[in-house]
Image (cartoon, rainbow, N blue to C red; front, side, top):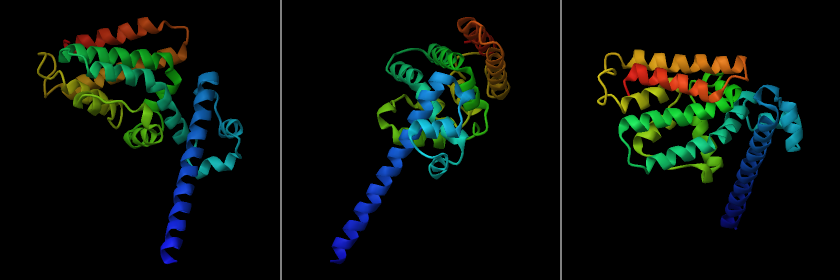
Length: 226
């Protein structure tokens, strides 16, 4: 009898956890659809709850606030980028070629959704992204890709500075322009310039994405010698 009660309790807990996971996914999916339709700047807790079929207050049982929900929903917009990194991981290229290709894929992605990725990489929760990324892939394991160690370390870096720095380390011995002494400064130049270009795009959505990306790649190539 004791064993039966334990099993029933276990089943109830599993069912509760499963329901919690499903509701979390429902909210993230609703937020993702609304971001694609309206843009991240026009999303509210009320609108998401309405679309998901829940009362506003229910969202706070699953997320600390709107920012946390939007951060997780933003991960959906990484899919093409993440897949490109996975393909790159299986391709034989030099460190320099891989370095530039990763920046190319990244910039293509962020300029397509400037407000979303500005919030992701420079917003309220942008200093410790790794736990959110891991949580997202626990909810959507089918979207998790396999990478080389170097690409994995870059992709799961805790913030934009660490991601860029991890990537920069891969070309440390490939060029005379990047040394252990100046690496932090070079990294700061790259991150700051990309942020500046992203701010330009946010201020004027008519700016050409390819031109902005090429300008960033030119500066990255210039300061790294890659």
